[in-house]
Image 1 (cartoon, rainbow, N blue to C red):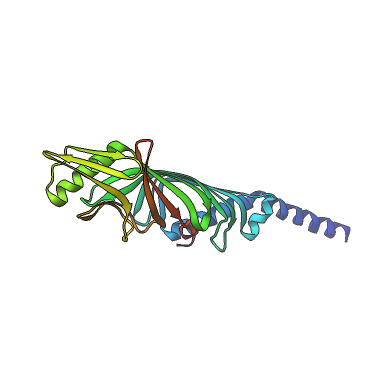
Image 2: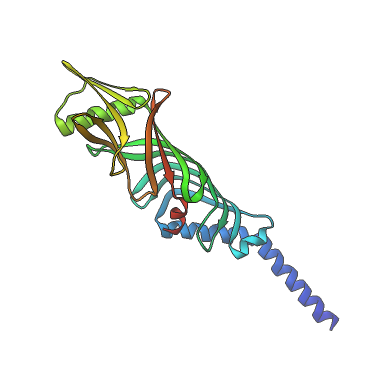
Length: 234
């Protein structure tokens, strides 16, 4: 009887130890699978789940999940890299409490169909996290010139950003100013008294809603809201 009891206790200890050390691997695999089912792909990617105690991971709860990837895609959205940290993660319900991190080289598209890269800084409640997209002034100038040439046949010589939200464009013999804003379609548009013209948009498959735009430190800053739970649930 004592021998049987010892074997049972030893087996329980072995199983408990395996669960203790193996649960982070299992949880990381489950989260990776959830991301892939939602449409996430990457050339290289690591997903690390941690919790205290680790046995919480057995029931699908993680204190923190770190996602790092290069050449990443979410459905038809692409970016050079992503480094994100989610906290209070419920693996089985595919939800999180908070998200922070950075997406670098996120593809935005001009009206002319040309892709360009932008960096996105993210921080906030996972269901509606603040996201700041920064596009440098030189890139904005290039995009505006290409868009106006393709759409209207205007050869613009300069495109200047002026705080708080003004775009000043100059062509031979004429200078025009207008506001940069987020239009009803969710694109960044150039608006004048003669009308509004979209110039830059984000792939709609990525759950990021553009809210407002302004000029900050000479560059274009776009404030948006990210639904990170949609990244997990698909």
